[in-house]
Length: 146
Image (cartoon, rainbow, N blue to C red; front, side, top):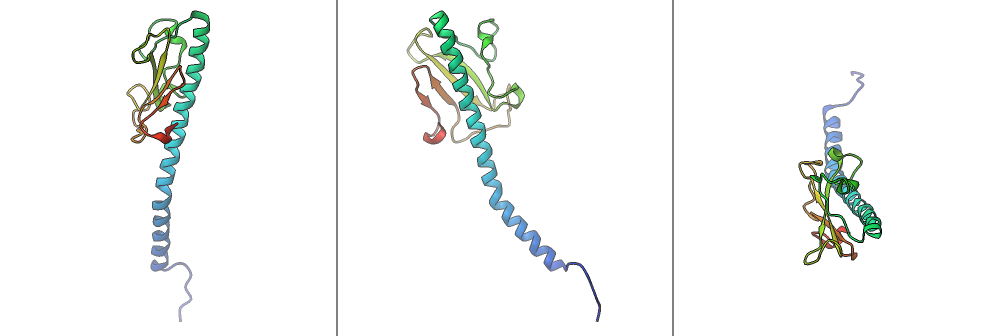
C-alpha cells in the first residue's frame, strides 16, 4: 500500500469544470454591469452638459452648438466626451438645434457610443445613441436606457 498525497487527475478536472461553469454564468452578468456603468456615464455627461447649456442660455439667450471638431472659443466650453479623458470615454457628445427649431430656442445633445475619438471598442447594441433636449425629452434605442 502506497501513501500518496496530492490530487488525482479526476479531482483536478472536476474542479476545472466547476470553475468553467461558474465563469460561463458570471461573465455575461459582468458584461451587462459594464454596459450599465457606461450608459450611466453617458447620461451623467448629458445632464452635466445640459446644465452648462442652460447657464450659457441664461447669459446669451441662445444655446451653443458644438462637436468634437469645434474650434470656436465659446464652443470649447463644453466637453465633447463623457469621461475624464477622451480616450477612456464611452461617448462622444455633440449639440445641435432640435429638429425643426432654431438653436436659440432648443438644443439637442447627442451622446454617440464608441467613436474614433473616444473608446472605439465600446459598443452599446441595445441603446445606441443617448439624446437629451432642452425641453426635457430623453430618447435612446430602447425604453430602459434612461
